[in-house]
Image (cartoon, rainbow, N blue to C red; front, side, top):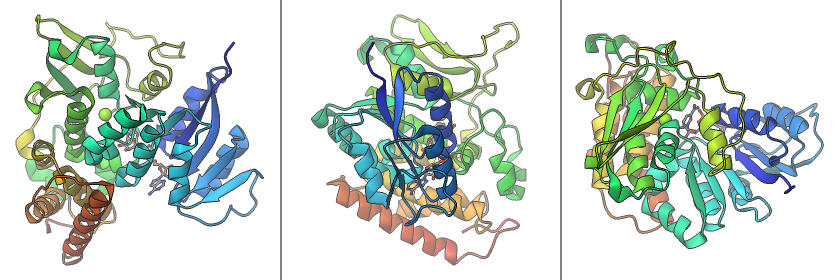
Length: 392
Ligand code: NAD
Ligand code: MG
């Protein structure tokens, strides 16, 4: 029997990180945790290290192991060490479960080093665009989506060429405000946005799901992963999150992938594909799941969707500006400094001030990200605290 394949989990203390470790726990004959990284949660990382005994752990935003630590293995510190772990030649599989632009360097490093990259950190693909695809082509790395919709599309496509696809239809839960009248949006509080109806996720993606920024990021992600132009990517609301997406082929056949909402299925597929391993899933009950309902997306009430897709269509640096302004806006919203309606206004302002130009290099993207971020932070800073209808 082959030895287990070594895996590094970037962002091990988060929601996707935790689900990845649950998946690996059921397949220890196939996968071994070789390294784990976290942002600043040193205690949580220490507990995971004691459980998994990896070769080393990386604390990105810290310089010390926690007091009273249980694990006495090797600790490394700093964001560069996260990137180094992604490129570690002794580890063939990288799970990137970092949040936001901070994951871009690791995505590039893993692909340049020829790894299998199980990518949850969609922001890195959306922002990096062609740079990420070029890194995969140059390094021979494999890019497997962890996002449930893109995993579904990959599974529906099988080995058929994109030329046979007439369109893909991404499903969206619609988020917590799917059926809220737009005139109530001014009263939305962070805790309302964090209460997702079907998925339990980290804070940033929960807010992105509430504004539908997440779905715009996913449209761009589908465009890049599957080489489809934007006119061939549709979105439909499916509140139950059971149909994970669909592929319509040119012969009129539409293929979909179904299952109860759990990230463990797409994570396992990203680790094991093309093989399918056994999983302790809850058997799908078509009668119990009936009826499967679909609705149109309320594009007019959730401007982050159109803004994001337009940024994707513009290409170049536009997705980086959209993403950076959104990251600032989400953080400001969660800390009560920006209203829900203020999020798209801040992002629209950043996009209008920084017109798209072609991406020259990673350094170029880093500087665009930094500029969009600092302009957005400045705009938030000039706003009064939220609590009503105040917007930038
Ligand atoms: P999370 O906030 O729960 O976890 C993030 C992890 O990354 C934590 O371990 C944190 O310590 C670490 N981290 C955060 N910022 C960092 C930085 N600057 N440097 C180093 N480490 C850092 O997030 P999540 O919900 O697990 O989401 C991770 C990614 O997966 C996001 O891109 C998200 O869009 C995507 N995703 C998540 C889900 C889900 O169900 N949670 C579904 C699809 C896609
Ligand atoms: Mg998704």
